Image: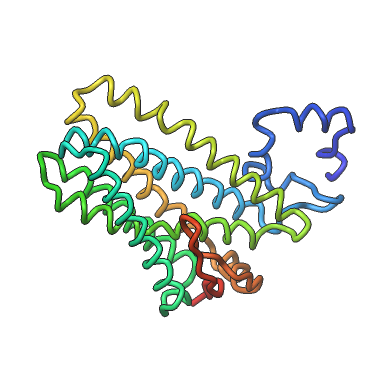
Length: 257
């Protein structure tokens, strides 16, 4: 089987030139080889984590794209108010990650912690959508919940790392970075036409609701995270990094129940 998936040097060069090459490990982890051995230890888990990353970063980049036009249209915020809100959310993110790293939640199973983050993010998007018509308190509450759940990104990277061979770690994290960049590119292409096709004040809450649905879709995927995958997460015992905007807190990897 190994010979089937190996290619010649010329073929490898052509493959590496493809813009979709970085996603090969996340989509076909079991067929990706590193040094003659499979680069991943659990191909199904890697594909599942890749799907979770796509849903998470697609929703996050969509929310970032919607923030400025939504706040201007609904609340009439100028640059100063937008800056204050962004700074407050960044502070909540840093404090929340530091508290999480020091709290008993760091010992919660990885799947459960991701579910909590997905529910918090979806609830934040729901509050964003409900804040139309000048209900600024809903927008602030949504910002707090959404900011507290930003640990999802580093946690998903840690989950991916646990299923990758040591000599393929850099490649796997590079694939994750490429996927995040692709989500940042696609978010305006998806949400922009929606804002143009509908009246702005009705389209933006709908777009936030759509971002919330992406977070909700993470729950069925997380429910399929098998006990064997949980055991693998535990056995690797790789420390996770909870970080955002340059601030980080090192915590033990989430232990299984």
